[in-house]
Length: 211
Image (cartoon, rainbow, N blue to C red; front, side, top):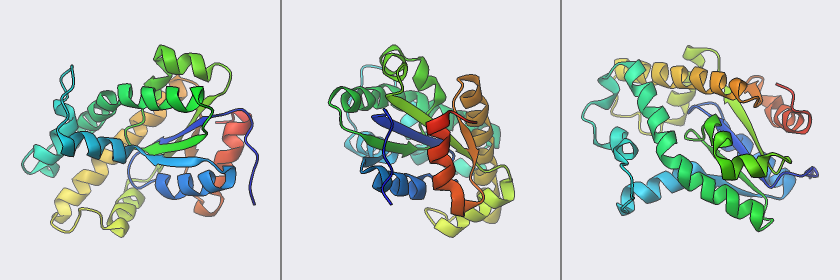
């Protein structure tokens, strides 16, 4: 079934890895007949092209270039995830502006979507009448997040059990931080379970503003 949009042009779906953002973004995009973009596409393009930025962007390469990165304290890794989002925010701002101004609806999902995007004037202006909306997904249980990360098997083959638990802890902390920030900005936060109703609950959240 195809649902009708209200007045949004850009729907942002944020949350830590392992919360099902990619799956639900695809579902919502199909329902609303909107394009769908992964923020990872932007991150990888910047990382691998080695494009030059006017500002420092070391955070963008932290996870790829730090030896034994998953042996670092989870709190430091959480801070590094926040820094990646801060580095990508100007690029996301441009994408948001373009899709609103060209009336081209899009669903954008990714770990690096920060609630503070809504404090950036170009986004704030376009969000004032509902053209930009966001939902942040959260998995409240760390062990479930670890199981989800293992089930995806993305980049986990060479990690030890201790490193995998550190990764899950860091991403759980990041998810908790995102949820707190989202609530501070008045943005909806949804627990991902039950999975079977996530898409419907997400649509209800953006239509009613319910948290």
